[in-house]
Image (cartoon, rainbow, N blue to C red; front, side, top):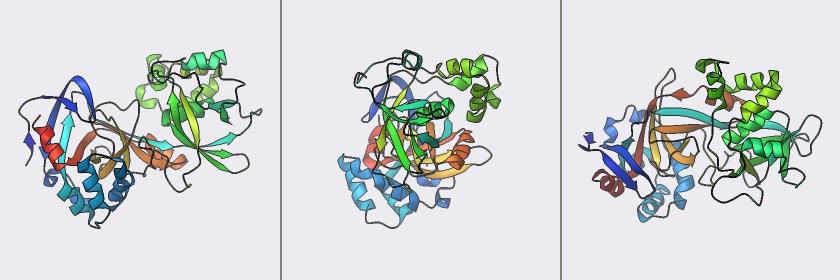
Length: 341
């Protein structure tokens, strides 16, 4: 039975806090979940075991140890976890992201002219640095040996910054993987919304391909459009992940397609299992693992689904934009303590 709290809690969670955030917490039974028994959860258990050794508190450590020796995924999750649903005034939003694969060059050529940069030494650990426009227009990064590689399209570079990781297919056929290293401290601003605000497109018309084609047709104005997003990401080369594994998420472990999600750690602890129900033309009921985060993922009911790597994953990810519900699985004592406020 659902046991909804009769009051609104102000959460100060062990894994983070939203000061003054009014949050409603509900405790549920697994039998309340739609289609709980329909999902084959062995893949979710595998994903959970990838990152649970990094969870250091005693309750998580004990669950992780049991998970290493159990084969019945359903019983494992049902016996050792309790369900909670955390809600705020913000609406639910479920989206998708992917690891792009891009054509690149180790050196600057007539075709490959857009650099992917490493983190500069003067980047502050906290606070804001130069904006995207200031970085690009001042040429502060040039001639310092900070280029990892060069791309042939400015929009591909822009969305690489949004995704935070990628595969680079070099001109000699080799694959180089890169991951997030740091950012300039500025908040992400949507260029799609800016196109809508300017009256260029209606909201339902905007997509990554539409933005790419518009910038290609309008290179000078397109440059300014991309610079509307002040946020700028720096990368690092990653050499210890086999090509068949997913990119590293915020927990510094490989992500699992359609099992790993990015969440707001202020509400959902990294490493926790999360039951997701997604509305829309292609509804989804599946156990996910919170193994990543993103600067644009905000709120208790907002998650980004890692779809996979490459062009097909990119197309699939672009189609995901639906409402739904997230239910967090926590160690039993932790969940009950939270429910009591």
